[in-house]
Amino acid sequence: MRVGIIGLGQSGKSSLFHTLTEQHPEPQSGKPHKRLGRALVPDERVEWIARNENSVKKTYAEVNFLDPDGFPPESGKSLNAEFLGMVRGSELLALVIRAFTAPSVMHPLGSVDGIRDLKNCFADLLVQDLAVIEGRLDRSIKSFERGDKALKPEIDALKKAIAMLEDDQFLCKGEWTKPEIEILDRFEPFTLKPGIVVWNVDEDASFGRGGVGVPDEVKEICAHRGWGIGAVRLSLESEVMEIDPGERREIGVELGLKETVRDRFLVAVYDRLGLISYYTAGPKEAAARAIKRGDTAWDAAGKIHTDIQRGFIRAEVMSFDDYRKYGSEEAVKKAGKYRVEKKEYVVQEGDILYFRFNV
Image (tube, rainbow, N blue to C red; front, side, top):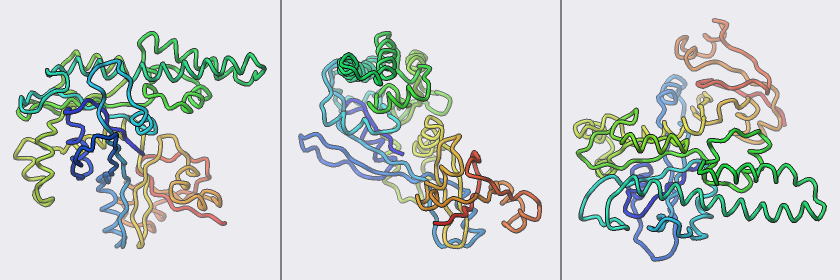
């Protein structure tokens, strides 16, 4: 899964990227650029399975991050093609908004106004989607009039999307059928993607889960767009990342960081993308993998290898809770908690799966 980190320059985008990936900022080259990094999702269940199975290898679910150049300072100014190409392929957008003062860090517009910046960035995303979808609709209508009647569903979906955008609504707030989503996904609209606003506050500001530290007006704006919101102190978090890993947690608590932004953010990513974790266990490897809520055993098999998916016979299933309660696979079987499922089985959060396959 890939998260695109967007926002104005000097908003804290690079600090968020550094905090999540531990990669340091690169010097500006004057040319459009992007940075790619990843973060492993902490998971105590992987740790427990590895200890219990004496696993040689531990594999964690991971989130990939993309940090492109910032938005142009003036709202309505076209985003460059390189930026659009970099970000459109992301599954989730994280919009960093500057709410900290720091006079030594110049704001591109000369003053700090988080609500203004939030509205402008949202408007830019909406305008870009409208331009792309209107252009596609024009071409589809011309092809339809020349006899390509198969384009009727596409034209209807695009018209519906344009009506929403012209009404100042993000597409993620719409009610869409599965075929309509499949049509829109081909154009990767920004406003159809789930999103999180990262409200970057001063080091001495209050913040926390449940929107603590976020003004009510900002919460209302994000709710209107269908985006999540959370306050963070990225300058402080970035400094903590420079500390030896073994001391970070203790020092973070002393500074009032009971949870790192990485931990909070990765939980939010899972929530916004509707992801769950399933596991595989054995002496060779204890592994966590992320899939969409509602995915089947057949889908989960494909996350490991396409050969397992192609030759799927059955999935043997036990819950992590039962595995920890009884202590071993054999004990789970004796307790009658071990199941055999077909490929249509809907995987549940915390399932431990063993796939039988033949290729």
